Structures are given as C-alpha cells and as structure tokens.
Image 1 (cartoon, one colour):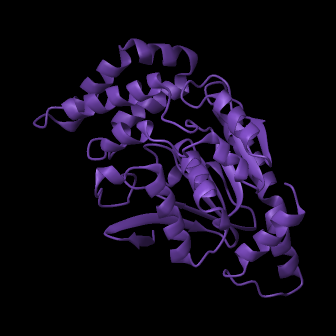
Image 2 (cartoon, helix red, strand yellow; image 1 turned 90 degrees about the horizontal axis):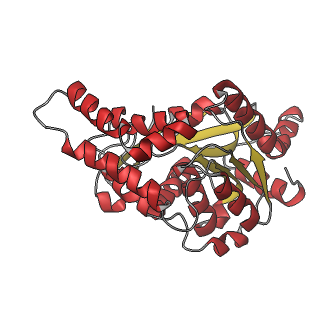
Length: 307
C-alpha cells in the first residue's frame, strides 16, 4: 500500500476508486481493513482510509503524547494535503467518528459532508467505566511476562479479562462488544501500541458539544442499542447538536452481523449519492474531471442538495 509521510511517521493508507473523496476512518485498535470491509464505494466515489498512529501498518509509534484526537485530526488533513484533496466527505467508526468530528470542528473548510458511525465519545473522555475497562486491558498487556511466549501471555491476559465483573456485564448485553475488547489483547500491535488504550479513552474529540452546532454540512449519524461502548444516546446527542444531522439506527452486530454490514453499506451509499451525481453527469457529458476538481463539485453539491 502507499505511504504518506508526516514528519518521521509513515502512514499506511488505502485509496480505492475515483470520484468524490470520502475519508472513512477505523476504530480504536483497528486498521484500514475495517472501513474498507464495511463500505464498497460505488462508481464516482473515491474511498480513502489510513492506519492511524499506533495502528496497523503505520510506523513508528513516535511520541505517545501525540496519541490525541487533535493530532489524529491533523494527520487526516495532512493526508488530504498529500493527495491534493482540498475538500472531502469525512467520516469514521467509533474512534474514527471522533477524529471526523474533530476535523469538522477544527477544519470546517475541508469537510463537505460528515459521517459519524457508532460514536463512543462526545465532548469529554469516555464514560468512567469504559475508561477503566481500557485501562484494565492496558494493565494486562503491560503485565505480560517479557520472557513468556506471546501465545501464553495472550492466553493469560484474556483469562484475566474474561473473569472481570465489568467484562462479564458487557458480554451479557453485547457479545460482539466483548469480542472486540478481547481483540484489543490479540491484535498484532497490542503490546507495542498499548499507549493508545491508556491515552485515547481519556481524551476528547472536541472541547464542547456546543461547538458541533457550527457544523453546517450534511451529516449522517449511525448508532444502535445493546452496545455499552458505542451508546445510542451518544449518536442521538450528536444528531441533536449538529443542525444538518440525521440519525439512523443500525441492527446491532450481536443480533445479526450480516444485516448490520448490509445496513452500513445501504446508509453510506445513500448518503454519498447526492455528492457523486455531478461527477456522473460530468462523465456522461464527456467533461474531464480531474481529482483536483472533485472537492469543488462536493462544495457546490452541499449547497443545493440535502442527502
């Protein structure tokens, strides 16, 4: 995959399709495979996604103090600059939704549309119980005996996690969420990037929820019940705070994973449709549409169409 360099860090990114750019970011502990697996861009949409700092194939880890939403937002804008994209639809899942919200508030001129899927933060740290859960996982990862085999260490950490009262409560209400917490231990970079679990849950995407009222682009918020990490009320609060937002409720993955994936594709495809129509009409008319011009088409479209 191509690499975008920001200082000493090489950001691994995925660039699929041509057309209106849509930057769609992964969640905590994920990588580019998550958004790419949830959305197949239709003709006329260019899907962009990158491995955030301390995630996936982006190296080196660099300073753990830079594992913040502000820095992640700066990194997203740096990728747009690297690709020569002046404006894009920006979105993300969980942590990625926080990054997208951060960019929409701090770099409004770069955002043509906004997608917030399963947000886990508002204008402060995660709820105390969620911060404590990720801190517990981080403690388990740091406690792994350096001399033990990785498989043995992971097994020990998983066992300790799965007997905790907080984990059992989550598993009872949302098995898929519990599985994702186990993934924070089994993921390939879990140990070397453990700082992400200590710092990001305690950070906040924006300083004040009232700042979201200044977001004046079409916004899609996706959320569902039965998820104590990505709470429906977070999605409802964001949809209420952002004037042009629409909230859609997804089927929880714990109920039907295939239906959840199908609904993600359906909602995202419907949201980007008005943005890509000028692109398709231009192609049909034989007009050459360079990548540099695509964001400006998005800018015009936002002014006349409410997805």
